[in-house]
Amino acid sequence: HVQLVESGGGSVQAGGSLRLSCAASGYTDSTYCMGWFRQAPGKEREGVAFIDSDKRTEYVGSVLGRFTISQDNAKNTLYLQMNGLKPEDTAVYYCKADVPPFPPACRFDGTDTYWGRGTQVTVS
Image 1 (cartoon, rainbow, N blue to C red):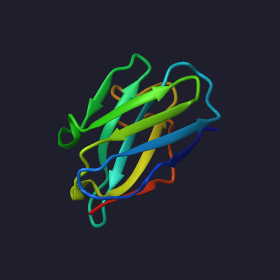
Image 2: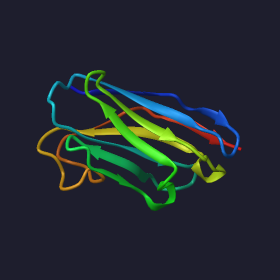
Image 3: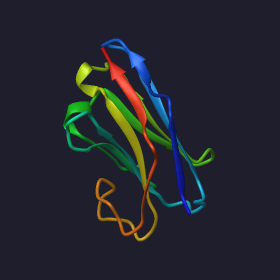
């Protein structure tokens, strides 16, 4: 059973930076399909950034050039470096992981998808 625990959220001023972490446990396969979603109050959940074990990445257009997703196999941890934060980035950020068989792209849910509980990011 995969467990995901996010950390690194907080409150920052516009233009600031944060780095989110997602520590994964219960999964030892070297292949992975992971990503970050966010949900702002009154809005639908939105996919933000995704990465697979081939290091292919995908980003939503609004964060291109500002956010960077990465994954450290040795630490079983997913990261989201967020620079140039804007008030519209305010949301709860969730980590997602799929186990094989993977979906056609990591932004989709697979047959076995796991979620963290989220970490709040507030930009003023």
